Amino acid sequence: MPKEIEYKFQITPDQMVRLKDHEIIHHHAKHPPITQKIENIYFDTPKLALFQKNYVLRIRKQDGRYFQTLKFGECINREGLSCREEWEYELPRARFNFLLFPVEIQKIMPPEEVLKPQLIINFERTIYDLWWNDQTTVELAIDQGSIIAKRQVLSISEIELELKSGTQSALKILAEKLKGDLQLIPEIRGKAERGYELLMQQH
Image (cartoon, rainbow, N blue to C red; front, side, top):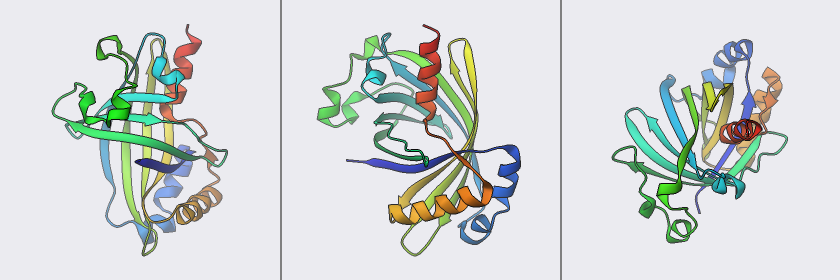
C-alpha cells in the first residue's frame, strides 16, 4: 500500500531566507530549485462523509497536468511527522476516474454525483531535491499560498520534507537538523485538515 512519509514545519519569511542559504541546500541539493504553481480542489459529500472517515479527495493541476489523489489518515505527531496512505493517478482532464483506484477503494467511494467542491487550496511550491546520503533522497518543498473554505481564507507558509527513497531514520535526522538550526515550529495539521476545520466552523 503506497505511503507518504514527510515532516511539515511552519516557516516565516526570515526563516525562508536562512533556509535557502543553509548548508544543507548548498551541499545536498542535486540541482537548482524548481518552482511550480499548484491548484487543488477538494471534493466531499455535503455532510463531509469522506473527511469524517479520515479520507481526503482532490483533483490537482500542476504544470498543466491533472491528478486525482485520495489520502487516508492524518497521523501527524508533535514533531510534524506525517504518515499517510496515498493513491494518486494522472488524468487526461479535470474529471475523476474512480476505476483507477484499487477495487477495495472503489467500494468505499461515494457516488460521484454527490461529491461537491468543498475547498480550494492553491500555492506556489519551490522544490529542492536533496541527496541526503547514498541511500536517502528527500524532496524539500516550500509552499506559499492560501486555503479557501467558502467565505474564509487561511494563509499557507510551510515546508515539507518528503522521503522519496531511503530510511525514515535518515529523514528524521535531516528534519531535526533543519528544525534546530532554523527554530522551525512543527505543523501538526495538513492543509486539507486545516481547510475542513475552517469549513466546519462556518456551519
